[in-house]
Image (cartoon, rainbow, N blue to C red; front, side):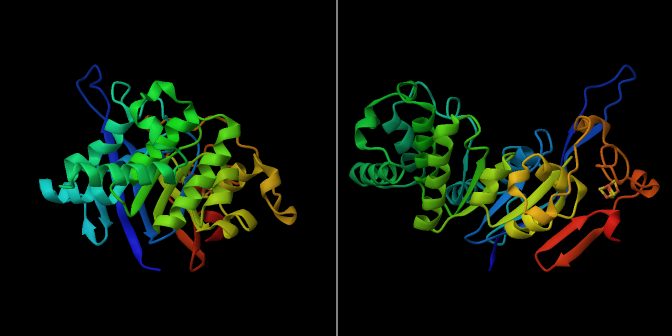
Length: 321
Ligand code: SF4
Protein backbone atom coordinates (compact mmCIF):
# COMPACT_ATOMS: atom_id res chain seq x y z
CA UNK A 1 0.00 0.00 0.00
CA UNK A 2 1.21 3.51 -0.84
CA UNK A 3 2.17 5.87 1.98
CA UNK A 4 -0.02 8.93 2.49
CA UNK A 5 2.06 10.32 5.36
CA UNK A 6 5.78 9.85 6.01
CA UNK A 7 7.30 11.23 9.18
CA UNK A 8 11.09 11.26 9.38
CA UNK A 9 13.03 11.80 12.58
CA UNK A 10 10.57 14.34 13.94
CA UNK A 11 11.39 16.35 17.06
CA UNK A 12 9.16 18.77 18.92
CA UNK A 13 10.83 20.57 21.77
CA UNK A 14 9.86 23.28 24.20
CA UNK A 15 12.08 25.43 26.35
CA UNK A 16 11.76 25.74 30.12
CA UNK A 17 11.44 29.13 31.76
CA UNK A 18 14.73 30.76 32.73
CA UNK A 19 16.18 29.49 35.99
CA UNK A 20 17.91 31.68 38.60
CA UNK A 21 21.00 31.82 36.40
CA UNK A 22 18.99 32.86 33.33
CA UNK A 23 19.43 29.45 31.69
CA UNK A 24 16.77 27.57 29.74
CA UNK A 25 16.60 23.86 28.94
CA UNK A 26 15.11 21.99 25.97
CA UNK A 27 12.26 19.59 26.74
CA UNK A 28 11.53 17.00 24.07
CA UNK A 29 7.84 16.13 23.74
CA UNK A 30 8.45 14.19 20.50
CA UNK A 31 11.88 12.69 20.15
CA UNK A 32 13.06 11.30 16.81
CA UNK A 33 9.78 9.80 15.61
CA UNK A 34 9.77 8.11 12.18
CA UNK A 35 6.48 6.69 10.99
CA UNK A 36 4.61 5.91 7.77
CA UNK A 37 0.83 5.98 7.45
CA UNK A 38 -0.51 4.04 4.48
CA UNK A 39 -3.40 5.19 2.30
CA UNK A 40 -6.68 3.76 3.56
CA UNK A 41 -5.41 2.41 6.89
CA UNK A 42 -6.19 3.25 10.50
CA UNK A 43 -2.92 3.62 12.37
CA UNK A 44 -3.41 3.89 16.13
CA UNK A 45 -0.99 5.49 18.52
CA UNK A 46 -1.24 4.16 22.06
CA UNK A 47 0.48 5.21 25.25
CA UNK A 48 -0.13 6.83 28.61
CA UNK A 49 -1.21 10.46 28.98
CA UNK A 50 1.82 12.70 28.56
CA UNK A 51 3.70 10.30 26.24
CA UNK A 52 3.67 12.81 23.37
CA UNK A 53 0.94 11.34 21.17
CA UNK A 54 -1.22 14.49 21.09
CA UNK A 55 1.85 16.66 20.46
CA UNK A 56 2.72 14.43 17.51
CA UNK A 57 -0.83 14.90 16.17
CA UNK A 58 -0.58 18.67 16.56
CA UNK A 59 2.80 18.69 14.81
CA UNK A 60 1.26 16.90 11.81
CA UNK A 61 -1.56 19.47 11.80
CA UNK A 62 1.02 22.28 12.04
CA UNK A 63 -0.63 23.43 15.29
CA UNK A 64 2.73 23.27 17.08
CA UNK A 65 6.15 23.99 15.62
CA UNK A 66 8.42 21.03 14.95
CA UNK A 67 12.04 21.67 15.85
CA UNK A 68 13.53 19.24 13.33
CA UNK A 69 12.64 16.39 11.01
CA UNK A 70 10.27 16.11 8.07
CA UNK A 71 6.58 15.34 7.58
CA UNK A 72 5.52 14.43 4.05
CA UNK A 73 1.82 14.34 3.19
CA UNK A 74 1.22 13.14 -0.36
CA UNK A 75 4.98 13.56 -0.96
CA UNK A 76 4.99 17.24 0.06
CA UNK A 77 7.06 18.27 3.06
CA UNK A 78 4.53 20.25 5.07
CA UNK A 79 7.21 21.56 7.44
CA UNK A 80 8.73 23.63 4.67
CA UNK A 81 7.20 27.09 4.53
CA UNK A 82 3.83 26.80 2.83
CA UNK A 83 2.30 29.79 1.09
CA UNK A 84 -1.34 30.72 1.72
CA UNK A 85 -2.68 28.61 -1.13
CA UNK A 86 -0.59 25.58 -0.13
CA UNK A 87 -1.77 25.89 3.48
CA UNK A 88 -5.37 26.09 2.34
CA UNK A 89 -4.92 22.98 0.18
CA UNK A 90 -3.25 21.20 3.12
CA UNK A 91 -6.14 21.91 5.51
CA UNK A 92 -8.63 20.71 2.92
CA UNK A 93 -6.90 17.33 2.78
CA UNK A 94 -6.04 16.93 6.47
CA UNK A 95 -8.57 17.41 9.26
CA UNK A 96 -8.66 16.74 12.99
CA UNK A 97 -11.32 15.52 15.41
CA UNK A 98 -10.59 16.66 18.95
CA UNK A 99 -11.20 14.92 22.25
CA UNK A 100 -13.70 17.32 23.70
CA UNK A 101 -16.79 18.09 21.61
CA UNK A 102 -17.80 20.66 24.27
CA UNK A 103 -14.85 22.93 23.52
CA UNK A 104 -14.23 22.14 19.84
CA UNK A 105 -17.49 23.72 18.63
CA UNK A 106 -17.92 27.50 18.85
CA UNK A 107 -20.79 27.99 21.36
CA UNK A 108 -21.84 31.27 19.71
CA UNK A 109 -22.38 29.77 16.27
CA UNK A 110 -25.37 27.73 15.09
CA UNK A 111 -24.58 24.27 13.74
CA UNK A 112 -25.44 25.44 10.22
CA UNK A 113 -22.85 28.24 10.45
CA UNK A 114 -20.23 25.89 11.93
CA UNK A 115 -20.66 23.41 9.09
CA UNK A 116 -20.93 25.99 6.30
CA UNK A 117 -17.90 28.03 7.40
CA UNK A 118 -15.11 25.81 5.93
CA UNK A 119 -16.88 25.72 2.56
CA UNK A 120 -17.49 29.48 2.54
CA UNK A 121 -13.81 30.16 3.32
CA UNK A 122 -12.21 27.50 1.12
CA UNK A 123 -14.43 27.15 -1.92
CA UNK A 124 -16.37 29.27 -4.38
CA UNK A 125 -19.47 27.08 -4.22
CA UNK A 126 -22.92 28.67 -4.34
CA UNK A 127 -25.07 28.83 -1.24
CA UNK A 128 -27.32 26.05 -2.59
CA UNK A 129 -24.33 23.81 -3.29
CA UNK A 130 -23.00 24.44 0.22
CA UNK A 131 -26.38 23.60 1.78
CA UNK A 132 -26.48 20.35 -0.15
CA UNK A 133 -23.01 19.26 1.05
CA UNK A 134 -23.81 20.24 4.66
CA UNK A 135 -27.02 18.20 4.65
CA UNK A 136 -25.28 15.21 3.03
CA UNK A 137 -22.50 15.17 5.61
CA UNK A 138 -24.98 15.62 8.48
CA UNK A 139 -26.95 12.67 7.23
CA UNK A 140 -23.76 10.60 7.04
CA UNK A 141 -23.15 11.15 10.76
CA UNK A 142 -26.74 10.26 11.66
CA UNK A 143 -28.21 13.76 12.14
CA UNK A 144 -30.81 15.65 10.14
CA UNK A 145 -31.12 19.22 8.91
CA UNK A 146 -33.37 20.25 11.82
CA UNK A 147 -30.25 20.67 13.92
CA UNK A 148 -28.79 23.35 11.64
CA UNK A 149 -30.64 26.16 13.45
CA UNK A 150 -29.58 25.04 16.92
CA UNK A 151 -26.53 25.88 19.03
CA UNK A 152 -23.96 23.33 20.31
CA UNK A 153 -25.24 23.53 23.90
CA UNK A 154 -28.59 22.14 22.76
CA UNK A 155 -26.99 18.76 21.98
CA UNK A 156 -25.67 15.85 24.04
CA UNK A 157 -21.94 15.00 24.06
CA UNK A 158 -22.41 12.19 21.53
CA UNK A 159 -24.40 14.43 19.18
CA UNK A 160 -21.78 17.18 19.46
CA UNK A 161 -19.05 14.72 18.53
CA UNK A 162 -21.16 13.69 15.51
CA UNK A 163 -21.34 17.37 14.52
CA UNK A 164 -17.56 17.74 14.98
CA UNK A 165 -17.07 14.66 12.78
CA UNK A 166 -19.42 16.12 10.14
CA UNK A 167 -17.36 19.32 10.18
CA UNK A 168 -14.16 17.32 9.70
CA UNK A 169 -15.73 15.72 6.60
CA UNK A 170 -17.08 18.92 5.05
CA UNK A 171 -14.06 19.58 2.81
CA UNK A 172 -13.81 15.91 1.76
CA UNK A 173 -10.41 15.28 3.39
CA UNK A 174 -8.19 12.28 2.65
CA UNK A 175 -6.64 12.06 6.10
CA UNK A 176 -8.22 12.53 9.54
CA UNK A 177 -6.41 12.69 12.85
CA UNK A 178 -8.74 11.64 15.67
CA UNK A 179 -7.26 12.58 19.05
CA UNK A 180 -9.03 10.56 21.77
CA UNK A 181 -12.38 11.16 20.01
CA UNK A 182 -14.47 9.10 22.44
CA UNK A 183 -12.72 9.47 25.77
CA UNK A 184 -14.87 12.44 26.85
CA UNK A 185 -18.11 10.56 26.04
CA UNK A 186 -20.32 8.23 28.09
CA UNK A 187 -19.37 4.58 27.67
CA UNK A 188 -22.80 3.87 26.15
CA UNK A 189 -22.13 6.41 23.36
CA UNK A 190 -18.49 5.47 22.67
CA UNK A 191 -19.34 2.35 20.65
CA UNK A 192 -21.72 4.32 18.40
CA UNK A 193 -19.05 6.90 17.57
CA UNK A 194 -16.38 4.23 16.99
CA UNK A 195 -18.70 2.37 14.62
CA UNK A 196 -19.51 5.63 12.87
CA UNK A 197 -15.79 6.35 12.28
CA UNK A 198 -15.30 2.82 10.93
CA UNK A 199 -18.23 3.25 8.53
CA UNK A 200 -17.06 6.69 7.36
CA UNK A 201 -13.59 5.34 6.67
CA UNK A 202 -15.15 2.85 4.25
CA UNK A 203 -17.65 5.28 2.72
CA UNK A 204 -15.09 8.01 2.02
CA UNK A 205 -11.94 5.90 1.63
CA UNK A 206 -10.32 7.80 4.49
CA UNK A 207 -6.96 7.32 6.18
CA UNK A 208 -6.93 7.75 9.97
CA UNK A 209 -4.38 8.46 12.64
CA UNK A 210 -6.28 7.36 15.73
CA UNK A 211 -4.89 8.41 19.08
CA UNK A 212 -6.12 6.67 22.18
CA UNK A 213 -5.10 5.24 25.52
CA UNK A 214 -7.95 2.69 25.28
CA UNK A 215 -6.57 -0.57 23.90
CA UNK A 216 -10.01 -2.21 23.52
CA UNK A 217 -11.07 0.56 21.15
CA UNK A 218 -7.74 0.38 19.33
CA UNK A 219 -7.99 -3.40 18.91
CA UNK A 220 -11.46 -3.07 17.40
CA UNK A 221 -10.67 -0.19 15.06
CA UNK A 222 -7.05 -0.14 13.94
CA UNK A 223 -5.03 -1.91 11.25
CA UNK A 224 -1.65 -1.12 12.84
CA UNK A 225 -0.54 0.15 16.23
CA UNK A 226 2.42 2.27 17.28
CA UNK A 227 3.26 2.25 21.00
CA UNK A 228 4.66 5.56 22.24
CA UNK A 229 6.66 6.18 25.40
CA UNK A 230 8.15 9.54 26.40
CA UNK A 231 8.16 10.94 22.87
CA UNK A 232 9.49 7.82 21.13
CA UNK A 233 7.84 4.98 19.21
CA UNK A 234 9.05 1.89 21.07
CA UNK A 235 7.11 -0.76 19.13
CA UNK A 236 5.00 -0.85 15.97
CA UNK A 237 3.18 -3.70 14.27
CA UNK A 238 -0.05 -4.93 12.77
CA UNK A 239 -2.85 -5.03 15.31
CA UNK A 240 -2.69 -8.81 15.44
CA UNK A 241 1.09 -8.81 15.94
CA UNK A 242 0.85 -6.37 18.82
CA UNK A 243 -1.95 -8.26 20.57
CA UNK A 244 -0.74 -11.82 19.95
CA UNK A 245 3.03 -11.30 20.16
CA UNK A 246 3.93 -8.07 21.95
CA UNK A 247 7.69 -7.64 22.30
CA UNK A 248 8.51 -4.45 24.21
CA UNK A 249 8.14 -4.65 28.02
CA UNK A 250 6.11 -1.41 27.91
CA UNK A 251 3.67 -2.87 25.37
CA UNK A 252 3.36 -5.97 27.55
CA UNK A 253 2.69 -3.77 30.57
CA UNK A 254 -0.05 -1.84 28.74
CA UNK A 255 -1.65 -5.11 27.61
CA UNK A 256 -1.40 -6.55 31.13
CA UNK A 257 -3.83 -3.86 32.24
CA UNK A 258 -6.51 -5.38 29.94
CA UNK A 259 -5.80 -9.15 30.16
CA UNK A 260 -9.00 -10.11 28.32
CA UNK A 261 -7.50 -8.61 25.14
CA UNK A 262 -4.42 -10.83 25.08
CA UNK A 263 -4.42 -14.41 23.81
CA UNK A 264 -4.20 -17.04 26.58
CA UNK A 265 -0.59 -18.20 25.90
CA UNK A 266 0.78 -14.65 25.80
CA UNK A 267 -0.43 -13.44 29.17
CA UNK A 268 2.94 -12.34 30.52
CA UNK A 269 1.92 -10.09 33.37
CA UNK A 270 4.00 -6.93 33.78
CA UNK A 271 2.76 -4.48 36.35
CA UNK A 272 3.67 -0.87 35.52
CA UNK A 273 5.24 0.71 38.57
CA UNK A 274 5.84 4.39 39.18
CA UNK A 275 4.63 7.37 37.22
CA UNK A 276 5.57 8.31 33.68
CA UNK A 277 8.70 10.48 34.17
CA UNK A 278 8.26 14.12 33.28
CA UNK A 279 9.67 15.14 29.87
CA UNK A 280 11.68 17.70 31.88
CA UNK A 281 13.61 14.84 33.46
CA UNK A 282 14.00 12.38 30.62
CA UNK A 283 15.98 9.30 31.73
CA UNK A 284 19.24 8.62 29.87
CA UNK A 285 19.54 5.46 27.76
CA UNK A 286 16.29 3.55 27.23
CA UNK A 287 13.58 5.93 28.42
CA UNK A 288 11.64 3.02 29.94
CA UNK A 289 14.50 1.82 32.12
CA UNK A 290 13.21 3.49 35.31
CA UNK A 291 10.09 1.28 35.18
CA UNK A 292 11.27 -1.81 33.34
CA UNK A 293 11.44 -5.12 35.24
CA UNK A 294 14.14 -6.40 32.84
CA UNK A 295 16.45 -3.39 33.09
CA UNK A 296 20.17 -4.12 32.54
CA UNK A 297 23.15 -1.87 33.15
CA UNK A 298 23.49 -0.81 29.53
CA UNK A 299 19.77 0.17 29.39
CA UNK A 300 20.64 3.05 31.76
CA UNK A 301 23.13 4.71 29.43
CA UNK A 302 22.59 3.44 25.86
CA UNK A 303 19.57 3.80 23.61
CA UNK A 304 18.53 0.47 22.00
CA UNK A 305 18.38 0.14 18.22
CA UNK A 306 15.30 -0.97 16.33
CA UNK A 307 14.99 -4.75 16.00
CA UNK A 308 12.83 -6.01 13.14
CA UNK A 309 10.78 -9.19 13.77
CA UNK A 310 8.70 -9.15 10.60
CA UNK A 311 8.53 -6.60 7.78
CA UNK A 312 5.67 -4.95 9.71
CA UNK A 313 6.71 -5.51 13.34
CA UNK A 314 9.65 -3.96 15.17
CA UNK A 315 10.61 -2.69 18.60
CA UNK A 316 13.42 -0.93 20.45
CA UNK A 317 14.71 -3.03 23.34
CA UNK A 318 18.07 -4.58 24.30
CA UNK A 319 16.34 -7.88 25.14
CA UNK A 320 16.31 -8.68 21.41
CA UNK A 321 19.75 -7.48 20.35
FE1 SF4 B 1 13.74 -2.69 29.49
FE2 SF4 B 1 16.27 -2.45 28.75
FE3 SF4 B 1 14.41 -3.20 26.99
FE4 SF4 B 1 14.48 -0.70 27.90
S1 SF4 B 1 16.03 -1.73 26.66
S2 SF4 B 1 12.69 -1.95 27.65
S3 SF4 B 1 15.08 -1.02 30.02
S4 SF4 B 1 15.08 -4.31 28.80
